[in-house]
Image 1 (cartoon, one colour):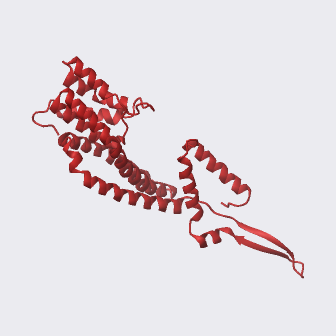
Image 2: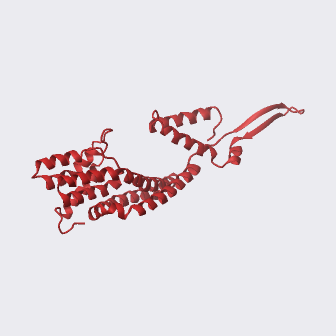
Image 3: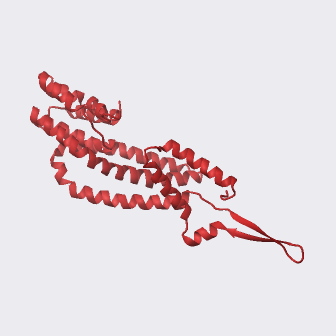
Length: 279
């Protein structure tokens, strides 16, 4: 990771890497989001590069405290790139380039990170762990823990890659990243669809209707198996509709995850009391 003309030792660079891992979300706020976390990460770098130049140090503090928001797991690359750029230039121009790189990459890298770490990790490994846990198998939590440990050490490699490649990384991996993002999106959506069909329970009850009495005095009962009719239209139809409704509601300003959970619970209780749902 450390080059021959580097102003930082390998241990110092790793400490900066760990500062981002532990502090990326520190002081998160709606005005600058991860801005404070990024600044606290870069403090040792700023002191080393601009400690003897108050004007540049002030500018660096200002640059690295601006709005910043990306997937934390992908932020390691940007931090590494910024250090490499500023270390090479160590000037006002270098700070401007570093600020431009941050602004340009935080959005695309957030999309990549959310897809790879959110869709693959949360959906694939999370669904496996949840399914095994429902069956009483403790291996599920082990799978989830191993994924988290792998992500942790993967962040070291991302930081090293960003520091070693610098700004060249943007053009070198652009095509590969797009292909990886698309593949991960397809995989993640497939797994989410399977989870909805197998883990979201929306069992419709069987409705009975009295048609009076027969000539022999027996009660005439007609039964309507709502679940059978729904499955004839499309298996797991109502779980899919419920998931789509929840996704749509989460996109509204007046809805958040806590309200949605309470709403689904109340909705399920009401349907059960009305005899529409069954256990």
